[in-house]
Amino acid sequence: MFRQSRVGVCQNLGNRKTMEDRFSILEKNKTGTFLGVYDGHGGSAVADVLVHTVSAEFFHALELIGDREIAMKMAYRAAERATREYDCGSTAATAFINCRTMVYANAGDCAIFVAGPESICRLTPSHRIDDPTERDRVTTAGALVKAPYYLHKGLGLMPTRAFGDRTMREVGLHAMPDTGSYILSPKDRYIILTTDGVSDVVDIPELGQRLRSSTDAEQAAQRIVELARKKGADDNMTVLVAPAALIESG
Image (cartoon, rainbow, N blue to C red; front, side):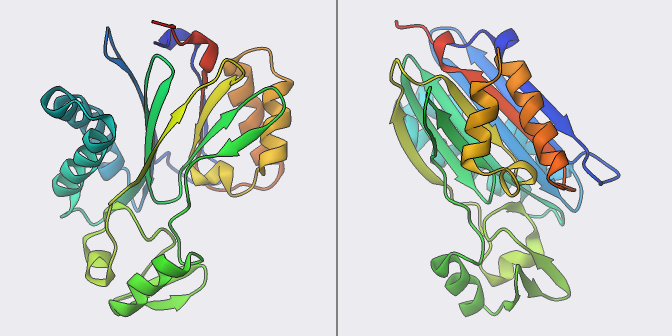
């Protein structure tokens, strides 16, 4: 499991007046470590719910059924029920790590990456209207598209999957996550979770360069956010960097 003090986290307001991003790091002895980033929009109320609810519901479901990926889906469904009447919203990306197995999920446009010494890969898709399947779902339900947004009743969103946003649920918005699993190899160095304020402007080669040139996870997180700012990011930014080397073998 991770030693929480060694997980690097950096946040920045960007050009926004308030910070609506949230993050979570929750360790359970003999069970595993849960990591999450939550990107609120229109307010932070939904993200404030998610930061506690998703991990709690995941561990509860895991105790009941034992299947990690199903438990992650159940946690997202429970969190969606808890936030569906909110006017504001939030996207999410989460990961659960036990030994060297990671189960991950996302709803919206937060991102999860795994970085080795020479390469880095993004594990999660981005749920926006530039994905044909996502676009078809919301337009079939009646949304209008004015890229990069889809519109309904005077409101506009970029993510096509999110928690809260009750009005946009009338045009197909939901929080069903894409999930997957990944076996961490001895060569994997970092697990990285970001909100879209970072992943929209920092590309994979740049992300890899900042990770390779950093001495620890905290410095890596700071350098990634600094680069995003230099490249003109104006959204809230959150980066969580977890060293894969801190995972116990047993």
